Amino acid sequence: MMRCPAKILALGAVLACGSSWSRAQAGSLEAQIDAYVEPYVRSGNFSGTVRVERKGHVTFSKSYGFADREHRLRNNQATGFHVASLSMQFTAAAVLRLVDAGLLRLDDSAAEFAPGIQGGEKITIRDLLVERSGLPDINDLPEYETLLEEHQTAESLVAKIQGRPLLFAPGTEFLHEEHSAYNLLALIVERKTGKPFADAIEELVFRPAGLTHSGVDDDRGRAADLAKGYAPKGTYGLRQAKAIHWSGKTGNGSAYTTASDEALWVRKLFRSELLSKASRELVLDTSARVGYGWFRERSERFGQTEYSMNGRAPGFAALVVYLPNDETTVVVLSNIYSSAATIMGHDIAAISLGRPYQKVRFADNGLLAKELKACTGAFRFGTDFYLPNAQVTLTAEGKELFLRWPSGDLSALIPVEKDKFVDRSYWMEVRIERDGTGKPVGLTYGRFRGEPQGAGGL
Image (cartoon, rainbow, N blue to C red; front, side, top):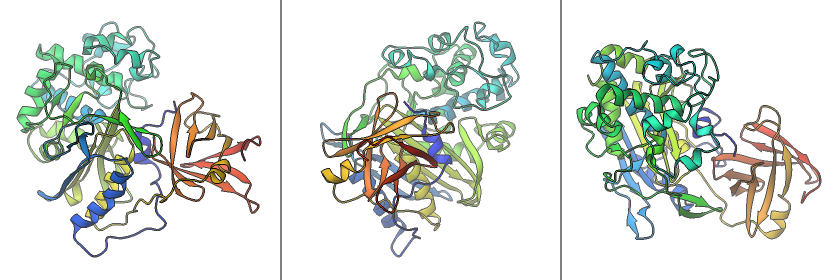
């Protein structure tokens, strides 16, 4: 499948799902946010909790949809959600707490804790925290999906990449999210505390921060009040997500929390003494765009430094945004596997601050058979595409339109207007370009453009 993680959506172009830009109009902030969220809920692309805090006050908090669709149990403020890559924030904080206690040094070598890692003597704990270790990524292994079908430990996960060569010299570049680096950090936490990772995080992070509804899912069944995860099915449907052993994501994606706990976490991390001044400054440092479980960069949209993180894991999606100048935090936790949460969170931040945002609008009706036929065909993208030189195919199945990737995977396309769609899997805008005669002359996918290949249905 295409390597197009949610992070790309967060840092790339904002999806144009509406016909025009709009500013916050009359009416309460609560009503504006609620009206913005509802189309995502109705279309089956969001189910969960949204929370906004500004200057220490909760300005919006509401839950939507079902925690358990089969039993009609609704999400509420106490519902917990798996938060995928947001988990790295907690892992990084645990490591920094050990550094503050003098039990670790940022320049310690990874080889001390995992001697079987090739090139480990060149990798420092600092490299792991900022995802510049060069470790081969466990998520890219052919057997990764099978790995999630069995219980794992931090040690067993690290063992999966032992003996494999580094992708680049440690500390020299950021290639992509380093899941293996955070597996290794989890192992280091275990080795230094002598406790299972879930117990160590509880003692180092959750309890000191006052996060009473958060934890690490290590398959021991200790998590309560957690939402069940769902995945898109076709254009508007949903199905239960494939069950996994969350221990297979130890350190990089195994945490769960509530929206209120996540917002509290932001307050504790950025505005309290949970970490030493030196460690907190490492988290705040924007010289590296990625590090310590956060994206840190200057946001043109908000006119200030933005700290954010998003993630997806089977059945779940999550986003947290912190804007320090406005002391504004936005948390979006969803039990639907959709990248929509990333777009939603940034738009909700804009609504909260009276900045431009874009409403989502979907076509009222599906495509007719004639319209479907006019949209089918193959397109080839260039070397700069997510999959270099990939040929993708628009194909009709029943009354739905799908984009077929070279792997054979399908992304359902939600109609927005004529020749304009949203890829439901990656929440990317898709457009068919036509000339004056109606003949397709290209397919745009986000910022990329593909050329038509052969006649097909076009």
